[in-house]
Image (cartoon, rainbow over all chains, first blue to last red):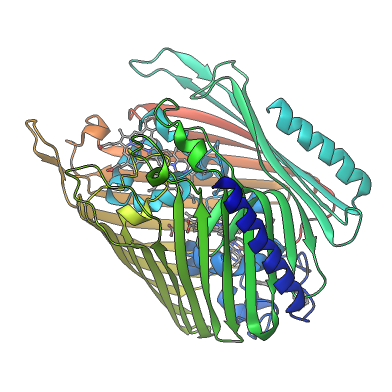
Length: 156
Length: 461
């Protein structure tokens, strides 16, 4: 079973690779890293860019403005346009909150940045018993399949 | 840090530094300090030191190749550690990346985080993505899932066995200026419990298909979201459970309206069916697939102003978990950057009105978990100095909550000062005062030393 699936998986990847090469868009790739330094914790792309379709994603620059809703629901943009995020964010910056196997809660690591949206502020080991009761599904993304060794000290 | 991962890190660091044209080495060391004095615990001092270390080397051998490494290691300076043994460490990612000059073609190999469509996973393997002609975009990945320790190795022996391989992909179609639609797939593990001998009751495998969408023809309108289906063949559930049989793991949608740069309205809707949504969990006691019913939430927020000066957000969110009940969170946040200053400050108030929690078989038959939350924070910069303060307070209405040990408030105050020594070093120290899980007062100290060598970081970080 394992071998069969491995074979199938590598076949699919090579096929996708081949397909990608033959049907590859002739557009030049976007810059590897954003050419201009961007400061502030909530950058607005349209402060510098015209609100036109962006190369690569073909969506309007404005749709990547780091508004409160964009930041809170960044999962939507990340799911489709991870490559764009990577021009400014290294995987390690996402790992402040999305650690495969975390050691410090985002709130502790970013305690010197109260302007950031870090989850788990304020006595969370106590508070989570209430928040987790109301919505355990929101915790599943980050603790359901990984990153939950700490939880198992109390949740067997 | 584990010998193996530090050796890998060092070796690659050396070679990358030797060959790369642009090398960035960055790290953060965090030392925490606190004393444990609570009843029922031995007195102890904890001083865990955590080291994060990363390397990004671009132009390794050839311009289009880069190497990225990031890991952490931990030891306790007071020679005792909180939950694990004395130390630990992990290579979180370490991969080689090729970027073609055309079509955003990208290939990765090694350990990396996959983040496409339905999958957000840590994988040891390979991935490829590319933009195709006609606005199509394609990505695929495959490899072995990075495994974590299981809770009870004795009863979860098939965990490693079941999660033998992971692969998936996404096909998207972009409509210039309008948005994008996509379908994605992930399969994690091939040998699900259904196909194994014996009486395995836990399925760690997962097979999901998702459709995602973003429609944003102007910045004034933004509709986005996804629906995830569980397409695995599950084993029969234990007798007597009354779980929700829906194949839909999740509907998760958001809609944004912006009337002018100063006014925005945002709505969200989420539905999650436990049996399908929790598929593949390694912590089944907490994320119980056989919990009856589903979870739903609706949110609405209204934004006035802009983060560059003054911004106010009013938000309300209603959640409904059938086995427990409903809760409504309502309140507002204010964010202010006074003109001509290097200060930023924020204020927030929320009220959470929640249904009571039933307790069976004791004197109290229910207890309330409603609370008020107040938060105030401030950041300030002057030359090389930075300072911040953050205070958050939750006051519970009902003291009968057994999880609060007769207390009514959960709070934390953090003060931090930092010093930027040159462009490459930054040190900061946080002092926090708050409560332990047993609701006893506690003071903690955290020292943070950050460095970054190499080309200046552009963009975010």
